[in-house]
Image (cartoon, rainbow, N blue to C red; front, side, top):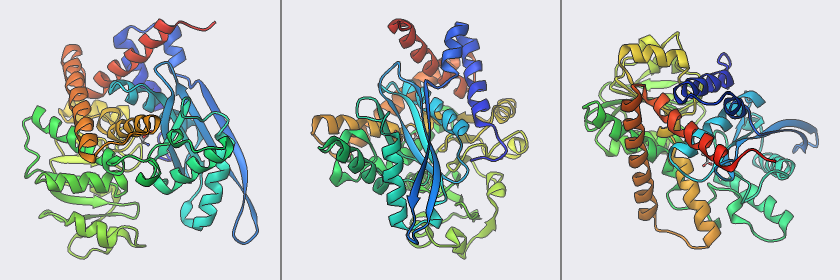
Length: 417
Ligand code: GLU
């Protein structure tokens, strides 16, 4: 999805850095740099005009040493099996670093949903779910929303799997609507978690979130929620962008109004008048204290890392910064909270949803948010301590924890047969 960045290469380079610190056995390193399973499916959909169109999709399971595999399903025209594999690998480390009992997976379909009717998206979803259902299951691999998908899509997947089984299986997917076994707080969980991580990081570097100037790239579920909660904490959101482009006002932008009136419109938030229009690339380089890239991968590279003015970068997206950008940030003294920690709120509450579904016992929203915050704060402190212990940046520290947990589980279980 980032046309010019090799995200699988990026994920493998990050793994190699952690493996070096851990002195990881080379056989184990090899195991972890490959996905355990990659399923490629080509499937037809009868469109509204009667035409048959063939779509390509994937489901990649990276590692299941610590539990069933878990990860979102992405609908986007630029996906491929390599990127989906990188995203599955990041899910493995993400679940391990926050210590929830899952391995990592990811799925995707190469499609521009803007060109499809709702009925066509439903048919595509049901057929794709059927194709990959041979490796899905509430005890084996549990999808969730990602870019281009939402609760509605998860409901169709849950229904499709349930039709095959002959009974309702709510735990086979997370991120469902609340009245179908979804969890309160799940929709906002990733953005909420991003702000918990931002607060902790602000404390670490002696910054106050209240009054801080924040720029958010991306106005999807993660970016819009993070911007809203940052504003609730007294931060001034000065820049925001969506897929069309960005807007900037150094005095602050009205996040709630932008969400209510401008998101989803053709011109997007750029139709808002009281701000200067900027491109997505310019947005990243705006003067601010905190930058939250919450769109797609490969946005901050060796070409623009040096131009970032923020003091703190909190990765709402998966893989927004390349390893070269990380090295430039380290030299500049810029503090980065890595994706596998910063955006883990989504999968943490997915885990709560799955537990609630398996037990048929549902929690209050306060309980969900409290437990999410507790896990994130605890994980942040663990990563920060590891960072100091090894003298690394925060990404490497998070990877050291994640990779070690997965490697330890693999060794303890033993290699079958
Ligand atoms: N797609 C989200 C992520 O990248 C959530 C995954 C999940 O909840 O399983 O973390």
